Length: 244
Image (cartoon, rainbow, N blue to C red; front, side):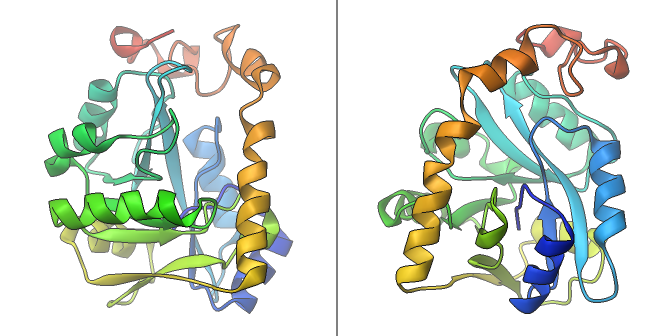
């Protein structure tokens, strides 16, 4: 349901693990490029669905939202309310990834307040440890919201460590969006054993690189980056909800 990497090796690994579809949502990449790459790597055996994990708020207090079924590009670093309003306009499926994880996630009060705007809550993330995943499971259970499982793969070897099995055929982008928005029954499934735990630990350690200040300096300071809300590509549409 959510990967950051996409290549021939990733596709081969997904197929070998019995995965039928990948939701591809890399950080700081505009929707047209994501769509192009998703189409390039899709075939009769594997559907790659383009999506965006949107960074709302500023870097110190950012909250991620996973959007599937976007019709138009949407930037990072806009207000949470601005993001929800735009996703409603586009009728996208809205998911809450890794709830209450560090300072990068929606927490319980925010999820509760926006429960009618969120279509599913992540209940298993292969990057996280068991106690962290239990938080998402409790929130989804308490709110009686559908869950989903995700490899959240930033590394190729994590592909297929966790997935979501829907009780319906997912053979197109539209079918996945419909399944998410209509609450189709599904199960979050993951591999077990020592190798799974080791790969989860490796993915977690990757956070140090992912969140380095050097990387964010390159991304945010100029305002010309692809998903900066004041980038000319967005034609000033998000200036009123930009946080930078």
